[in-house]
Image (cartoon, rainbow, N blue to C red):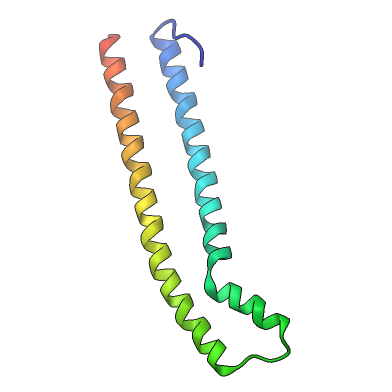
Length: 104
């Protein structure tokens, strides 16, 4: 990071950091969606069943049940991660705001 020389430069750096933050959040959401999809038990069971010629009704039922449970718990984890990100963004905004108020 460069040394801040004046208020305009600080605003420019703040904007660049905000853009970077949004890009990282977008990447994080995409990666999280990919992880949810690959870790989904229903997807894993479908792959396993595709390897076999026919599926047993018990495996199909088990696949549906595990899919519902995994969606429930992964949804809670996703909400938890989003809450943490939002808190960090708010904290960063407060810090930047206090720096800008000091430089006035």
